[in-house]
Length: 150
Image 1 (cartoon, helix red, strand yellow):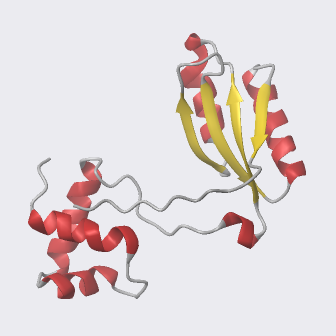
Image 2 (image 1 turned 180 degrees about the vertical axis):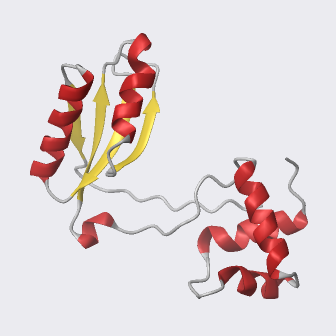
């Protein structure tokens, strides 16, 4: 999909300053001199094209009482889809991806406590038959804010 000037303007507005109002798309439309339906339609097309992967709020999980960790597992290539599917069932999983490494499946996990994280990881091991998971909690958080200049 080729982005035109209006698509780029919409993306510029929603990536850092999404309006938290009852009709955000109407407000975006007003700022750009468009109709609300056109903004909704364009965002829908951008999502269908995979340009927008997710549209929603981001919260600092630590400030609302959650702890997080990065995890890695050695998953045989023939089990990637099955194990990935099991991991995806847990609501605290925020990312799940493959790497070209001995530990090839990596994921991030948020939970209410370190004990809950251990419980979830033990459950994942039990359900998948994988024998080991690296639990790599962060020592220091470096949050990087990204804004794509379109």
